[in-house]
Structure formats: C-alpha cells, structure tokens
Figure 1 (cartoon, rainbow, N blue to C red):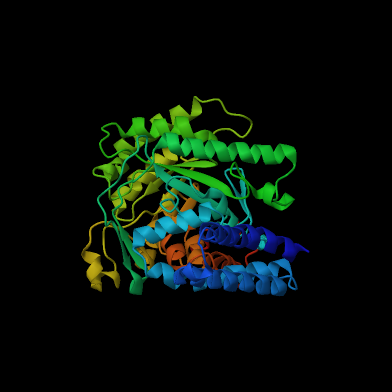
Figure 2 (cartoon, rainbow, N blue to C red):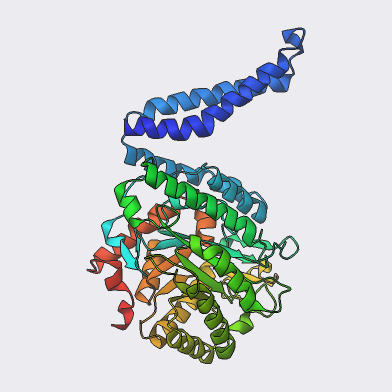
Length: 455
C-alpha cells in the first residue's frame, strides 16, 4: 500500500497528469481538421510517444506496486543517475536553472527512508537528522527549499541574498572543469533581492505552520522532531551585500531584519571573490565592526522561546595564518555561533591548474579545493580550540570526504559542486558511507568524531 501511494503521488501528479494534459490538447486542436489524413505527421508521432509513455508508466506501476516503499525510494534515487549525462550536455548555468526548477516543482525523488541514527546530532539547539547540507549558491532565491530538503539533506542554505535585486556579472559566468570534478564561477551575487526571497520564505513558513496545526503534514513524527522552520531539515539563510553598496554592514542588517524570522541560522558572506572589496571585511577590525552591528540588529528584534537564530560567518580558503588568527580572535571575543570553511578559491590547485578553463577568472569549487579548505578547517579548529561549531565545505563528493572534514574539526558539512555532478543519488550514498566510516572507527555518534585527529 505504501508503494502504491508513493507511486500515485509521484508518477500520477508528475507524469501522468502532464502527459494526459498534452494528449487532451492534441485532440482538441486536431478535432477541427476535416479529415484524419490532414493530421500532421509530427502529431501522429507525438501521440505514439504519448502512448508509449503511458505504457511505460502503467508497466512501471505494476512493478513498483509489488515492492516496499524503501526499495522503490532507492530505485528512484538511482534512476536520477540516468539524467546526469543529459545535464552535462547543457550550458552550465542553464543546467543549474533547470535543476532548481525541477526541485521547485517536486520533479525530484523524495527520501522516505530514515537516516542512520548514528548521523543524528544537535547544534545550536537545533536537531539535525544528519550533518550533510547543501551549500549556498545552489538555491540563491529560495525557490526550491521543500524539494531540496525532501532529497534528504540535513540542512539547506539559500542565498546569498542581497538587499536590492541585481543581475550579477555578465554571462557566461559558470565554467565546468569536468575531468577534475570542479567548477569556476564568477556569478557576482545574482539575486532577486530581499523582498522576493522574504515572500517565498514567508509563504513556506505559513504553509508549515498550517500543516502543523491542521495535522495534515505528511512528515513523520521523527521528521518533525528533527525539523526546523522550513519543515523536515534545517534552513540557513546566507546574506550578501550589493555590488554598489558602500555600507556592507547596513546591507547585512537589512537582511537580518527581513529574513531572520524564517531562518534556523544566518550566514554573513564576507568571502566571495566575485564582489569587489568584499574579502577585505575579513580583516580583524572590519570583521569585528560588521559582526557587532549585525548581532545588535538581530538581538534587538523580538524572539520567542527559541531565541534569535545563530549567526555564522563564511570565510575564504585563501587566507594567511595571520588572517586566520584575526578571524578566530574575533569569533571567540564576540561569541560568534559558527564559521563556514570555506568559500571558493581564487587559486587553481592541481590538477585543475592544467585545465585550459582554469584561466577563467572567478572562484573555483569542487574536488581540487578539498585539501586547501580542509587544511584551513584544521587551522581554525585549533585556533578556536573547538569552542565554535565549524561547517566544513569544499570538495566533498563522498562519505569518506565528509568524514575527513569531521575528523578535522567540522561539526556539519556542506556540498555543492559534488551535488551538481553527482545529482540526487549522491546524497544517500554519502550518508551511508559516512555512517560506515564512523562505525568502522568505533564512533557512536558524529559528535564523538569531531576533531578526532587532534584528540
């Protein structure tokens, strides 16, 4: 019964209804033709394709109705690997837009299997069902939160969001280094702005509250227990500044005032390499001034029992030892809630340096960034003496990668480029592999493994 219900929800709503709609449209537009012989050949081919599609759906339904829900769910995730080669043929930014649109419309599988219990943890008073999150930059305008959380991420971070809408840098601005599993981007905070994002987050927040009060939510009790303001999973909101703004702190404060009520945590992005002067905010004095103003703006707002959302800062991987010491000092002095390590790099670590595309300007992400970002993570864990939760980001494409970040000091991890290349099937794979790594080394929880390389 569970498999039949899942089949009905996924296939009927996503495939059958749209296919029948096209069929009805085809019949209605051709009904005025005087004779059948005048039906265009392409229309006949379309009907044959429609019939074949319906046949496949019905045949698929007959098969999946005989399997359990978990098996069917796993099959759906594995099936997404068949789509990856298609995305590889498209322009990088168009493929990204298409992926966000698919997630926004629910045209992606939904994880129905519970996460391994060993992956559950609590950070900032929020309960995560697993530590694997989606980094900012994928869903810049909060269009697909429900679909992305439904994929099984423990948390999803949207943004960066700027106060005023801006187009970002000229296209093309995203470049694949496929053999190296890397991407270079110079998007430049393309954003629909605070107002548009606030409307979407507000609508989702209202829907979530309605589901909770009416008891119509489809999530299980475990999902709700591990959920946040966006439902199952935790929601982070990443704030940026406008390119032409001369007062960065004011831009971030606007984001806090408009979006913090919908966020389980907030991130101040001072490390994108694609906004002129932004990385200068990572200096000791500049960072201290900005963080103090943002904390004051957040704390002066009215909050319920949960209190204000935690405030994190995302830093670059291209920092000297002195820079890291300054950031750690500010983080400890101002009791910052966390750091994300790291953003993209302006360097071109091997083997990416050998790719002709590496000459493009912008920030590099993906596998070549792994060692650089992990080394920065290790340094920051030691400098902060493990007192501040760190999110490890950069080059993760397997459970072993995530595990190395955790042992180096990360409490949570994020991926983006690995997800862009691996698709939805990578998410359950990473979680299973991560659980195996923990069990292999005798850890009973994620928390026990955090910073294990230094204990």
